[in-house]
Length: 150
Image 1 (cartoon, helix red, strand yellow):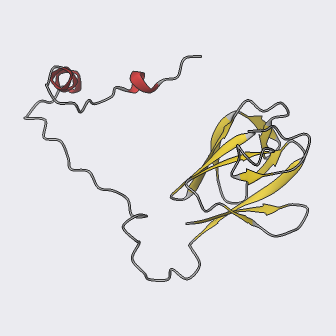
Image 2 (tube, helix red, strand yellow):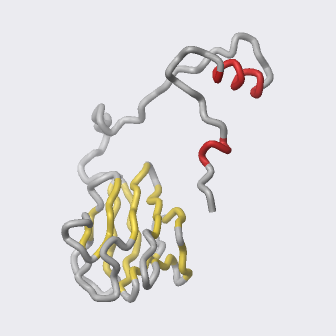
Image 3 (tube, helix red, strand yellow):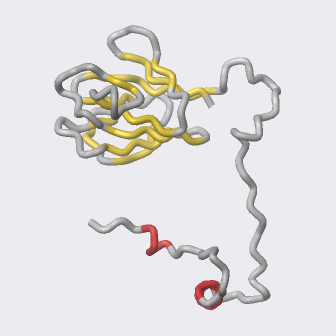
């Protein structure tokens, strides 16, 4: 997937070629450097996935805005406008140039995982309890395990 930030003020588009891109003022700490005093050293993080870009503000002083609304995190869709302090870009998402009918390379293909046979158990809690007590080093996570503390 081609993901680009198109500068609203004009200029060449910025292609997000990495899966995770850190935006900021510091060339040592950031992948995409914006040399402007109102941009934090590490301003925000952009995560490229199939069809979306996820945004996470990294505690920037002047904030990150999507379509004029200050955000801490969220999903960016094609056409959305993202602003780092006073600098604005339009989100462009599309197919990679020249991919046509080519098959995706193994590194860009979605990894398939086999289904877990629950042994006839219909109760999810019973299944998770069984997995918690197993001797396997693989552990299933409950939704509550993923919640970040406020």
